[in-house]
Image 1 (cartoon, rainbow, N blue to C red):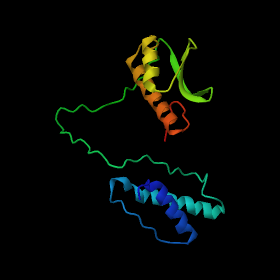
Image 2: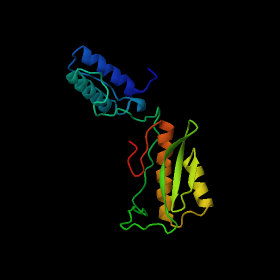
Image 3: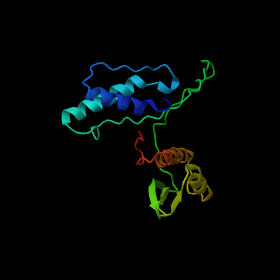
Length: 175
């Protein structure tokens, strides 16, 4: 079936719950079905909790949202020589040009990403992380490369949240 395995496994877990089935089986043969065992386990736990509560399988504390691809790309294999292992900087510096509050707003029924600069109070809005970051750079509102890197990461998360119709909170995980 050309449908995401997450939904199919949730439906199968629901049917199995109604039939009081004790054993569930799902294959992980194809790239598209990768992770199906985990999905079916979570789906069956959702159904079990719903049954115990005598309610519908909703708002039981589990998320079954997963982003999948039909065909997985190969992972690049690197040799050990000449590799630089990335390390996070221990200290953090505040950008002398100010900071930004990033979020999602609605303007005349259209959802957009916003970046509000402090101390100027200027609000930049747009549909993509790139256009907002380009505007911030063009206006010279940042002076530190690590601030640019951080803003790019957070604006990209906000763009993903917007595209996936999820809520977004700065400095919090999207999933």
